[in-house]
Length: 445
Image (tube, rainbow, N blue to C red):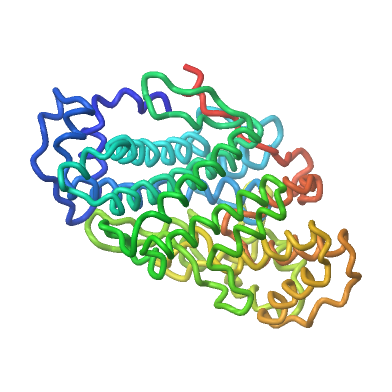
């Protein structure tokens, strides 16, 4: 991420991100080659603030395919066969003497993609760190709070994705000043900081009135007001609480989120894609029976499934098996059915599973089993009939998360936080299952 800190000014960051967006306009601003943050703050228009919001949401999608491939291959959810790059089946699977490299696309691209968005959001936060625009009559205080609530929520989410990859190697949280970066924080400190940032954002959203002044895409449909965006914020906070093992806190955050035991599993917030100029296609979609660039489900996803489970519709049988370097798959990944299908950031089915997990961990096993039965029966399975013990219900929880959240970026994280990486299948004799990614080389330059 350091290599991106040499961008000349905050204004240039706004320009670069805006140019990547369709129908994006910039009002007159001071000379970007000779400006200061004080100039920007004094002369900023609402249009420029909104460009930053739209730019951040657009940038969240950058390198998303690489992120999902990386965590899903290591987590033995999928194989990623590539005619042009062997590292999906060598480095990521630990083939022979291959290890994860700290200067390779599978970590550097997602890492820098997330920090580019954070840089964009830091511009927004910095501009609105005082009430200059309110005093100038450009914003109301409620509107200022809305921008800050949005920026800090999305910043927390982006930090969490990078921490998911590097785990105990940690991340930089304080990157507000590109020329004076804060230290790399370990996992526990970083999670605490992310939780704190989400709480700060919630405080802003509670003071943001009834509507935002900025546009959000259709991926935020139903979550595009301060009150409903706060529910999204608390859903993310519940996920962070689970990662921290704060189970009572997870339940409290769920209560303030859009969690609904009887609600639509797919209610939530999504990355969205399009075919328009300057837009992006869904990088997780490949046509069925593709050749050259292929994603196939790990064979155990099919063999471990319970008969009648409708979640097997997330894969489709190939006309001919795909093979590469001693690996083979008969079923294409088919979670996303076309190249503009939305990809969930977080949705209600995950929240129900968080609710079940938090109840297991706080001792309400009957309530946990009830929640798991909602998942089972709505996917065509009989109610849970196993022992109602903590150990058995954790096994059941991890099974349901595996199938409900397939190729949504969770499997590797789930088995890792329950210290079960050794249960993931080893497909070739000298393969390895990695616990974490190295911090990118550029961070140490």
